[in-house]
Each structure stands twice: as C-alpha cells, then as structure tokens.
Image (cartoon, rainbow, N blue to C red; front, top):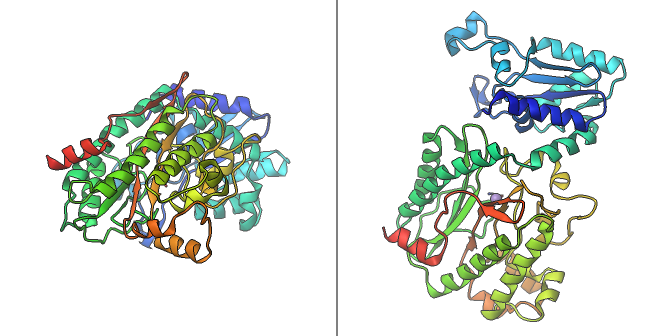
Length: 462
Ligand code: GLY
Ligand code: MN
C-alpha cells in the first residue's frame, strides 16, 4: 500500500470532477469455487483499491458530496471468526492507513443508500462485473439486476478513467519493481524451454516465481507452441524440436499492479532461417511502434504504423504483395495480425476494462475502426504523459483463417496464398513490452527481458 496521503489525494481529485450526489463503491466478495468455504483467489476491485486501499472482501464505501462525508463500511471479526482467522485489525485501524476516519458496520450501507434514493439524490456507481455486486446493488438501489449495469454513472466512469489513466511516480515505481519479478519469470522460464518438456512445466515454474514474490499472476498465462491461438490458456502440449513457443505472462505485485510481457522463443534454442525472418519483422514492428510513442500521438496511428512494418516485411518475403497502404486500409494484413497493438495497463492488466473499453481507449475524436483485426485495438486515443501501455505486435498463421479467406478469394491482390501455405503449422510470434508515456516521449519500463535473436539464443545456450 501507498502512504495515506496518496489515497486522500485521489479522493480529493475525484471529488473535484463530480458535481453533486452520492458516490457508492462496492468492494469485491469472495466467490465459491466448489463449495461455499472453498473460494477462488480473492481479488479486490481495482477502483476500490485505488480510492480506498482496503484489500479485503465485504467492504463498501460512500463519498457523499452533498454532505461532505467519506464513510467506509465493513464488519470487524467476531470471536467465532477469530478462531479461524486469528486476530485481525479493526476496521477503524485499517481505514486510518488510507486516510479514512469514518467507519460503519456493513449493514448501514444499505440504509444510507436507500435514504439517498428516497431523497432523490444523484447516486453514482461504476458498472459492476462481479455477480454478487450486481445482485447487491440491485437490492440496495431497488432496480432489477439486468438494469444495474446500464444505470451506472457515466460521470463517475469518465472521472475514474481520467484519474486512473495517468500513473503517478509511485505507481510507475511499483510496476517497475514488478517487472524485476517478470524478468525473473521470463529469463528462468526461457532457460527451461527445450524439446521433450511440456508447456505446463514452464508455465508452472513461471507462476511459482510470481507466488514466491508474494504476488500472483496478473492474468492466466498464455504459453503455447500453438502461438497462433491468441488466448490459448491450456498448457498440455509437448514442446518439439522446430516449434516456436509464445510466452505471454504477467506478475501482479503485492499492491496489485500488473505487468504484461510476451516473448517468443525457438524450442530448440536456435531460430531457423524462416523463424528468424518472421521474428525480425515482428521485432522491427515493435521497436518502430515504441519509437513513435509520445504525448499527442494517436495510439491508433501507432497501431497502423506497426501494421505497415509487418506488411512491408511480409512483402519482402513474398507472403504479401501490392500497395502497402491499400492493403492495410482494406484490412488484408489482419490475416497475419488479427489483434490490436496494445492496451492500457495499471491495477488491471487491461486497465479499467470493467468500466468500459470504449471509454478507456477512445474518445469523441478517435473512434474505433470497425474492421476485422483492427477492431480489437483496445487503445486508440491520443497519448498523454503518465499513460502506461503495452506494445505487442505479432505475426500468426491461423490455418482456419487462411482456409476461409482462400476459399473466398479474399484479398488475392495483397496475399500470396501459395507462399503463405508454406508457413501453415508455423504457429505465431508476439513480442510485448510495457511502456510509459513521458513528457517528451516514452520509456520502456523495467529491466529489459532479452528480445533480440542473438540475446534469446545466448540466454537459451546458458
Ligand atoms: N497479455 C494478454 C493480453 O494482453 O490480452
Ligand atoms: Mn497484453
């Protein structure tokens, strides 16, 4: 946790952005996995953590703008709990750590909100994603469950996004410290990769390193020799000589900030000529994109720039042809890069996606491009100092997409299907780093995880 004044300042900034009414925040609950007492790993809601800090289930908070009050609601443990949990600090002591002086038992929250509803106050809340929070808000606000999400406050959503999008120095430092662990996860993981091992041996060791640093994973690891499957969370494949392994993983720090990196390595430790050629295009695309990052630039344009490097590279190898700009405008490159260049990162690996990706990544000026592939770009708007984002281009050979587009004679002007057929079974390559937008440009965060062909081969030879 950060010093109390950090949380006081965050709430003060929030209060400046909302005119009137009552802001209500519901923390996350424990969720049963296979019976009530056996729960999924508890993760506090990120906006709750951001403004109120308390990292425990069963909490709620109110900022009453009209009466200038900040109240935190929760229950202290009773003796029946203490025998299972051990003694725990009182709510009022925990609240002090975050500059909160007014505490109430949890049951008072409902009465407070109901009273505000009765007084026709403007009630602001964020769209819930946790089913328990949805049910609870429905009950407290007296609206049906399927209307809760749509009744969320746009004013609050935009205010929270505005504040959380710009990372302060202590947040940047926290993420960079997290990348020390990510570095260890990746370098140790990469050194384990060899023919005859299973993917889960590497994925498990990487997760073990995260747990051993008092954190966890920031999302379920993607680690597969079937790298063309973008979010393949299964790790059951045997790794064979000649395979490429995509490793996409992140650490969640003890303070719940995320890291997110991807490296792609040859299972046998040496890139073949074909692998090296495709790898170098992805790396050039990533480095060109990183170089273009600075305040004022639209991330949508950086995405399109990375597509350009990929298209030019694939043209040189004979997989694509024709006019580069026309190919990208029509979306032919999405055969090879069917996803966006990156996303915001902070307390969530896809930061604030619960509040609404469209509001996090876009604005009135920059709208999403509604085209296969590019439509998945999660961040398009102009960059500001303090944004932390990922840069993660890739090239993939998805047999299903190849077969479909070929059968439709799609983009035959831009894609050489005969040449591409030589790459079916290649898998995919993605390279990802986390980048801070600075006042004058950008800074790639943290210790540099090997990513050139030479550095990866040298690491694997150790
Ligand atoms: N690291 C997974 C993703 O960005 O979707
Ligand atoms: Mn990512």
